[in-house]
Length: 413
Ligand code: ZN
Ligand code: ZN
Image (cartoon, rainbow, N blue to C red):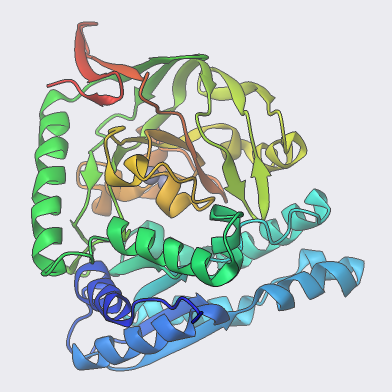
């Protein structure tokens, strides 16, 4: 019997979509590309597609799971407070000079599950601090950027633990192709239709200007106050350099910025959260005045505690997002152990840094103005899923009126 292999035509189309729809590379624009080494078949196709589309210089930066593990297993104690700042400074300089950014995701989500959570947290913190100058260009949306995914074997084994590895990779590849809308004859046109549908939702929410959203579901009774001057975003959006891109391939969400001090109540996660190589399951959290005052998890509670202790903003919300239960990713029934996919299967909230673009005229606001309007700041931004087929959401207006937004996991209208 021959080995199952990834459909190369689909991989070509995924590269094309990532370059043309995702990052929308411009004539002469440079591209900084990060990816796991396993994703080289996609990296090569992305580079080719980018050069065909007129890219100036494509610079890939590869990482490898075994190299990462080697550090945690063999490096000395002081290694875990370090990060390659020189590399990130270079990336920041590239973005300041107008380069676009693409990340190819798909590492083994459980790569570090047997490693000491404190070491992983320290290394993550050092990395976030060193990466901040580069990351700011991304969170401020200075340049066009996108994330796409490759079916890494280590990832595929987690999603399909009962299949031989080659079959698991093909099944995951097909799920990525479907979710990324490249399994259609004209993926670029399919994305245009999808973006128009998301736009209709964000327009409706932006006209309503809700003061808060009230989520109800099993274990959840949560009121998320929205930031002053918040703006709902989704699908294609315009970076400050004027380029319209789709930062997430796939993307089903519409999202905005909560007020850092106005979330109240309890919330239960509806899916496990794969975070930095560990799995956090059964998350239950209480918020008071926007701040987490109680946090529990049935698995990985130590990782959750380390996470929310990162800094003051790590205990507060930086994003709230709406995704219908009927979205294609949700209907696949798969748990991807990967935020890019799982967050697009369910309504979610994110702890940590807000997106300045999720404010009216956000690009013109200073960090102080964003904070004054309720935008949260943190070194982390971690999404976790709180929506299901049982989720009801009301929009609450300034005057306290309630408008149905979601009923039984779907848009109410
Ligand atoms: Zn999101
Ligand atoms: Zn997010």
